Length: 231
Image (cartoon, rainbow, N blue to C red; front, side, top):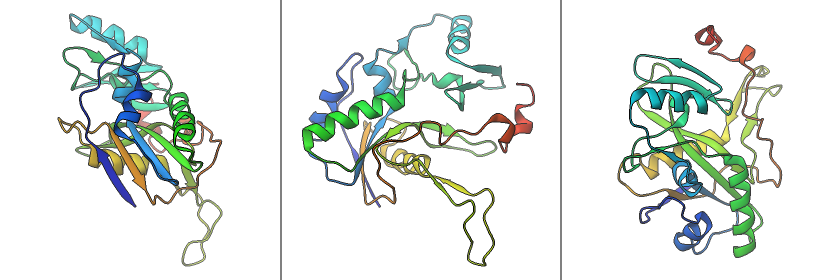
């Protein structure tokens, strides 16, 4: 698998995302996945805010969350079926503003895919919208898929046999999140100015329709359920 980050100029709030992508991705091969950071998706939607104090920020986080709980450093929140800090609201590389979570990353991914397919006449194409997340009890952030289109986001091993003939009962591999982690590693978290990347030769199943629910787990079935006992 090859991940090629794309260095760009600074994306401006309210700018047309498709024009920006076509400027920096003039061609794309069949069987490729275009990665787009959720930050420029949110900026294209003018999903920004200015707050003047912590109380205003707290109200904004609560209004953007399905669940919010104050912790030592951040608000631990649930939004769009994912656990994240501060409802995904980001202060880094925001030029004094807060950048909110995109409205609907799955819809955006599908819209981008249709436009690129038409422009470049490719059929097997994936679009992946990424963000960064921290795991419990682990330092550092990794990539996560906030939305995608054109490929299956999970590989299910349940019911299949391992190398010793034992059937898997729980194992599933998060394809979309794994690709997001690989891409975010190359795209960077600082001043790299790499909001786009192209992945080639990825081990994915390209498909026209995907289910945005395939990565979600009901709370009662989640491995970390004891940590959510206050919900």
